[in-house]
Length: 74
Figure (tube, rainbow, N blue to C red):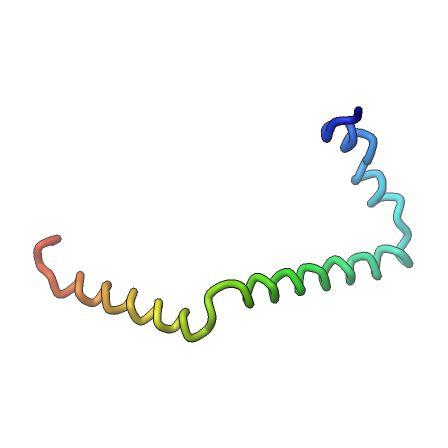
């Protein structure tokens, strides 16, 4: 059975990247950028919405303003 470390030793990523031709590298890079863009969109849709983000920002600003009013921490 091959472990993860042994598999990575067989898959030499640096050598593969150096051997790729320009004709293959450009579409490959564009696919990687596209996959990353999709990942960011999925993360954004699952995460905090814009309305929730604005509400959170407002709460944080109010908390900062209240802490500046208090002279107990100075």
